[in-house]
Image (cartoon, rainbow, N blue to C red):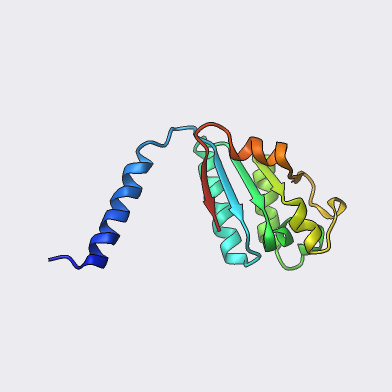
Length: 138
């Protein structure tokens, strides 16, 4: 007989699998990155890139400590992740920077890597609230 915890885990997995059946072939993906931890960033960018290659329009939102990956001074600490961001942009993905977080950590728009858009209600909202958008966060 299943324990209550095991039953809950099985139900959660089944629910996740059933929800994925409703995902459209070209539903947009909005990836939120709040971390400056290199492995987490690599996972987020890699997952997003694979989904983008499979036909899902991709938006990456850099907020909280995620801003460190999108600024020029991060090149020494995050070369692989910044290369991944450049590839996402080159392949038509959108990378959006949280303006409040950028300011909080002492950066300005001039510090952004090429191709990164400054967020705001219009830019971020258009990416996040497109019909059928799926979201993930790291």
